[in-house]
Length: 298
Image: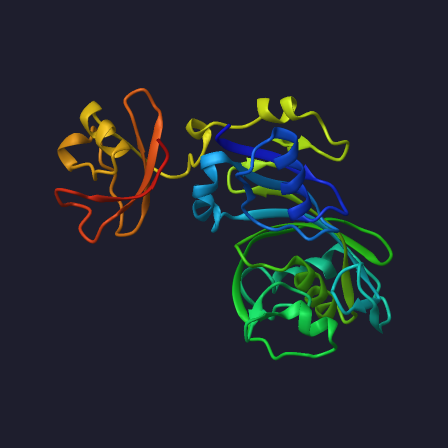
């Protein structure tokens, strides 16, 4: 039971709740997720099982996609529907052209100020703890990338949109800022994550009805189906044995060496396609020992 499990997190569950349920259902202590979803949000959560928990860092920068509904006319302290209303504003007349014009300023590289109700630590304490104590902490803006921002529909005071974005993007903050651009105020009404890297929500398992552990075990993606976006290096039999003992493979023991930059990750696989380890290119990827072992899985 080593591998990746795609689940559809229900509303009301924390990401920790989902991990705990999976841990109990499949009877495996080594379970973790690759990126938190807010309790009110639904959608794709990547769960690593067994030895695969060692690979969490290689999912850290994956691009994500969401489907969101924002509600105009009210801003909340949490920037979503869970918070208290702190400001009310007139709702502007909406049309597709007006919304598209507002969206345009949020495509590409943008700056966001993280919300107070977030797990970001400042001075050693998560911001949400300061927020609950009624203390406003000054936060530095962060650069994020909005790769795609698409209007899906709109009603009198609601806008539905999909967004593809980089790590660290707050969709709550994006909704609030779009509301400001439209001359109003807004908060995030609902959110569903539909994609993480190459994995999609339609391939996930629902857990709202707490399915049996065997069904979940059967859906675990093995190592051979993971990290497909990372280039693979095929090792000869001697090198494969050496990796199991923690020895760095040499260039002569590889059937192919992709052109990589220093510190770039590669998958080390056997001739039969078994994922043996993840390595990173050293300072001289063209040298005799081009890669350094980082995570050995066998």
